[in-house]
Length: 130
Image 1 (cartoon, rainbow, N blue to C red):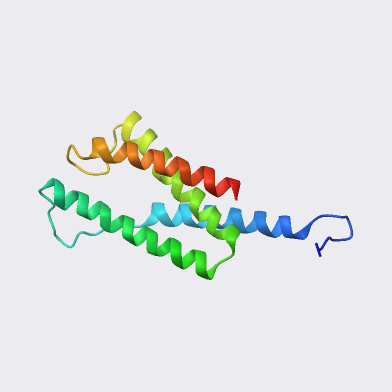
Image 2 (image 1 turned 180 degrees about the vertical axis):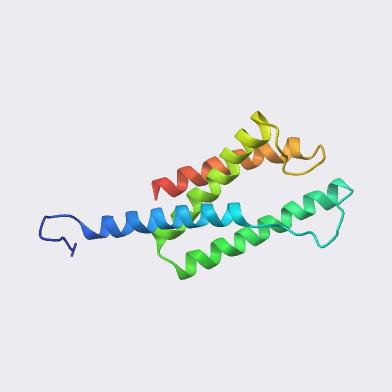
């Protein structure tokens, strides 16, 4: 049974939209406010730099599984959209257009960044379709 208020508005759609918006903005703020501290570790080789990126991906995956299990589906899908925008938009605009920074300081960024843009775009599409 679909609950509607006295004006005929479907409350489930409103709750889903609010959850989506909350997830999107809170994760967008969260992802841009984290300060990374390498504890004095200098990553010299390509393997070390790719390993650091891989560690970040594992942490992201764990966060995704926690959010999927503990929060509403709309919040989780908002998180997916925010993560996808972060992975794709940030890389295209700030890494490629403005050359402010790269995902790593070595040549492996030329391989990793296009993969992240495609993966980020897929996350945005999947999150919006759900």
